[in-house]
Image (tube, rainbow, N blue to C red):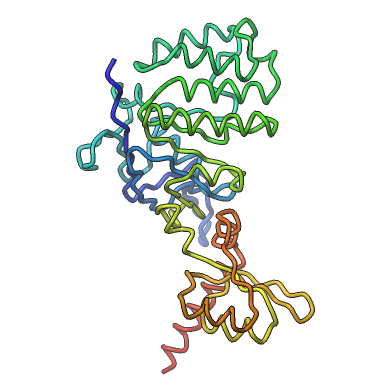
Length: 334
């Protein structure tokens, strides 16, 4: 069978709201409104043939976004599209689209297995459902993770169930394969074996892989692109290299560090006695590097996890909004 072309994915101004609640007006009347918003005008494009990390704090909208791509739900408004090729305009809405859904594999915690059937029945189901299913790969991975197909899922530990999900995702060979917190319950050796298998399988069978994880430090080596969701919006969607240039740290004597920091935006500050470390937005230029060496200040690379934490810090966000409001107020007074 010819290898499938990797899928891309796109969201255009997507809104997803859940539930309804009754509100009382000032005059005693009532009306119903949406209770919560999971995605609020989210727009992004996932490049075909990449491993993309999907990051966000709890409740940021990651699982909702991934569910849309796999046609597990529909958006309240906006457009969702998946498909092969470099022209996003030619991609298709996955909702009730058999061609699209058969080529998109979403695996979340629990593995997507049938609890009342032995695992070998689940494998048969996926072999029928996924046109590019690789039975030999599934068998090899089950041996690697020491999982017996004679058992039912409810007889497995949480970690083993998660490993089953990893097997289903990798063996599906789906042009768009999505792992949503699949590592949950896995011990460290199993997680690292899973990461190695992702890289090896991706190299041998190119496809598009989306990987959502809170263990950013463990998985950042896999990412080519990164999407960060915050409060239902896309905070950024760019290459891992571009994101790495979004921040750096300065550590040293307070006066020297403050002078070097200048008017750059401070994402985080930590002080101990006369030594301070600041995390700054942006990338250092050659002048900053030379000045840091001359002043005895350590200039550090910011790990992806630290940068993600700083960029999505609610306190920093409130401070930014407050600063903008203050600037607007001063401008109005002028």
